[in-house]
Length: 233
Ligand code: ADP
Ligand code: MG
Image (cartoon, rainbow, N blue to C red; front, top):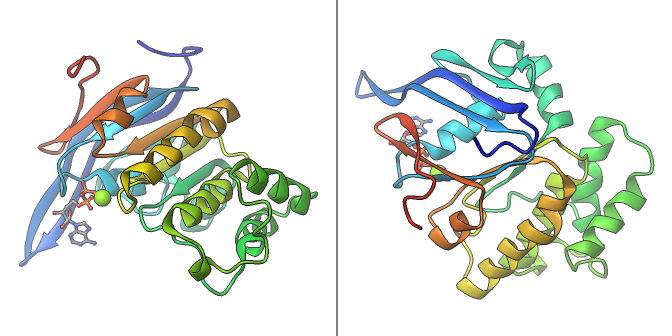
């Protein structure tokens, strides 16, 4: 066990998810199990279509399973009402997407502040500026997403994912749409900014180099989660 303090941050228990395709269920997750400990950074590998995004969406409560549970700390996110799950996600989970998902009609600062306003936090502006400085975009507060490069948009998205100080950071192929040099800069942010912020990180990636920076590697295969830490040493 690679736990930092031994407490489980994310518990995945007997999780199953099917999509209906051509009238038949297509099993994506088949009674998948895994525990992720507080403070760990864990890579989620698996070929395209293996269910990585599905799993991250179930953990964040964006989607619901057919069977099984996901607990975040002591709370079963899979048993919450839709409204409770939305509020829980806003407070405790940060999400970084492959395609950045910034709101195009809001500038950089407004994209960040939106999260804090939803959470009703004070000192929103100070916190946003501090984080945007840390990702190197402190001088671009008034810029709109379409005037930023992909790497810059992803840095804003990372600041946005951290602004409410979530305990859990989920990232779904965060460099999947970026060139190699820009990807390296994003992975450096994981080490210099995201990890030191103290949360638990689960990131889906195809990059073995990035996965090797993590404490553990999980692989999704045939609907199950396998711990493959050490396989590529
Ligand atoms: P990955 O992120 O590992 O590439 P996904 O979780 O996106 O995999 O998808 C897993 C499988 O589930 C794929 O076969 C995909 O086509 C299917 N799938 C994902 N979302 C849906 C959906 N909303 N409806 C039907 N099938 C879906
Ligand atoms: Mg995916």
